[in-house]
Image (cartoon, rainbow, N blue to C red):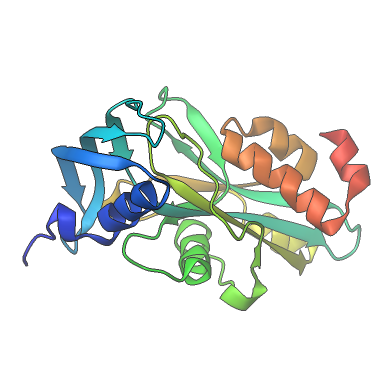
Length: 224
């Protein structure tokens, strides 16, 4: 299988086009390291850039090329009590090696349908089948979690699932993830406010607030 060339990849050209659209004069881009997925497509890349702003200034040269990503808040609503629960994924992360609690998330790679990727990531990381039509998109334009060092562009979604108490409990502490992608994931079901306090990544915290604002759950919002 032939490896995808970095400069021909969707991620690279999407990033470079955005730079140029915003008036950046890109003089040079050096590929320091690239990792590819099982299909030999560019997964992410570490780049050294030489670029000038429209104001005539240089920008910091290092870019971690990751591309577009999705994050999905899955909210269980107990059919009897109406209490809300978060379905989180629990795994260790390279940021500090600690066990993290996160919303299901993943990379678009060369795909353009964010909702389809979001639905697939929910299934791969939690085992739950969610139709893409059931996902509510929070932001039409991407959010950038790390503007100084990465092109990572995030689209956020949420879905609400009304289940019985026993059904909700059945999704707790199941093993998920793709071993080929170095994913060792356990699901974690927890009352919403308690789950919010477990989340340490800013994207997850933001998505909690945006979801509650969108559905108008002001009482729960006050508990956070």
